[in-house]
Length: 347
Image 1: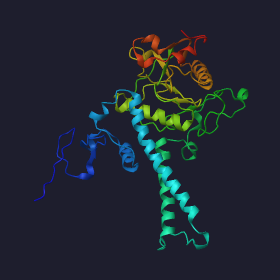
Image 2: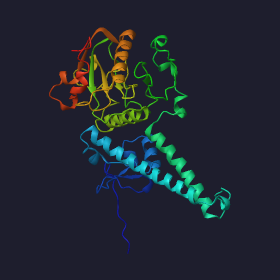
Image 3: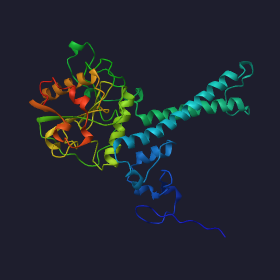
Image 4: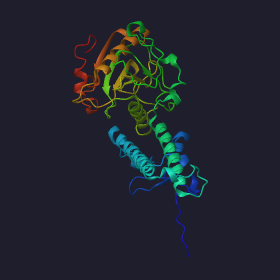
């Protein structure tokens, strides 16, 4: 006599009847199950979980054990590295097969032929193309598939006659100007999900600009920075229960400015100061390593732009997050703050 195990949803505690509507926590020995509709994941999240083999879902209990950004970052990056290893093995197998095939005896390259060599080679090629495409989507690289359709009007209108670089240069490249040009990577370009609810408007011009680190790994290319920013938004919304990524702008090691909440919306970077300040978060951890020259250069351009647009007061004060909240180790980044020591508005 067979026994059928009954499964109950972790959140609503109802019986899970249809196996297609269940999702299981893939965190060690946890294996808790839940209705897909009870996970608070949107359709995009569920679609990515279904299509990308190495991305895993964690229940609220396991996710709550991620007490900081670095643990959540390392968890997702581990999934990504596993996915990349699969691609490397697959590519190596395809190359080895190509070396051993006899050109004189190679059959027509068609999967419908009974010859196993041709079929396997074609299958490997198709699988490699599909997996590479999925990896590009997950990393959010702004290739020509996305960059050519972006609204170029959102790029900075900095003085191009001085820089000799077109303002409408495509957004699918790193800032090769070494931080001499102010380039924005908007929310659409880094694949941001919509805010959970409407964000209040920020009263402008603001008189306070706060500098802080993201306390994540550094990034030196646009592809890597896009991944860091997208990962931070997921953490802020799903783990910290914020309505959106908490920062107004993020400064990448590639010399680009990533738009978080932007000029006009109140951030959630520091309690007590959100409604009267803008936050500039530098991607990385800067307790001993200083920001790159291009990061500092583009920061100066961003501040000048904010003053010119009337978003920042001409007499603004630029300050470190650790100065306002000295007891919180989250804002500790001595090497970052020392880089602004000789700036006019620094205090």
